[in-house]
Length: 427
Image (spheres, rainbow, N blue to C red):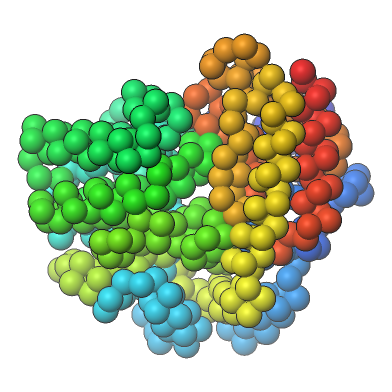
């Protein structure tokens, strides 16, 4: 055990997770690669949990941060803040929400917490609909709507949460149905649920479930839900903390795969927009955002430095069509991984879109989750020079692959080959 690991254990909570039997200290990065304290280079296929969205040490972002820090680092939302207004204008337009208002936070957890405050206040209800296998953050309110027991440490809650079918296509009671039948069954379940309860404030849903193992419903499910929600006046919150900014390749926002009946009422974002800087936020219709009748500020949300980083990062993303790159390179990568998975008895499914890919592992010859294999592949991939993540609602048996969106075809092939060898090493 390294001395830094020992020091970490001495001062950190027992529940603060670390990857690997011998945790790695990452000291610097460039492009799609990072280096550890021993000087070893890794191809990064997890991006600091989908946060390093464009590239490590992206010169445009580094320059923007440095220049802004040289002027002023902090002022708070009590003062006018040009970078904050400029980024809010761009995000409001990109969101697709009419007459949108934007509020910046420092994390996805805080963004979802704010969305819940807005929805429950607007609707005068503390009842929330959430998806099974979901994850929305680590605050008291966000934990209370998380449908994944591995990330929900308490049953105590300020909210009454009701869980809806639909977030996982290939497991559960509707897995055997066609896509159209699956959607119809989930809508019928939602209708039935609403017949037994008071009116909820909102449905919160990740278009692609992140911590849940990159699972998703068929396109159009949330559009079908929207028709039901609208009849009851229930708001739709799209949690885009992991799916936003073009990561899925096919869409800029995850909700657009379900946009037949319009955009969500509230959209939350974080992670990738800051490329490592602490940015989260909420976009909502003006009447929803303005429903609070008390004063509020954000001390660190909308910081001039993080806003400068977000503006530079978003500009780079759009100017270099990284959404298109995610679609092209991600499409090649997922097909390569499916071919690899077909040769392994441990792989149940390779799923995902763009550069958001999950590999679900099971015990050979069964449908039983295999968290031991997932942990072993994680270790073997690191030994081969590749960093990946893991998750999944069934005992953490899904490998999570989410490289920076500037990933090249050569790097995709390199990572796939390391993963293939790692899978072969565990059978």
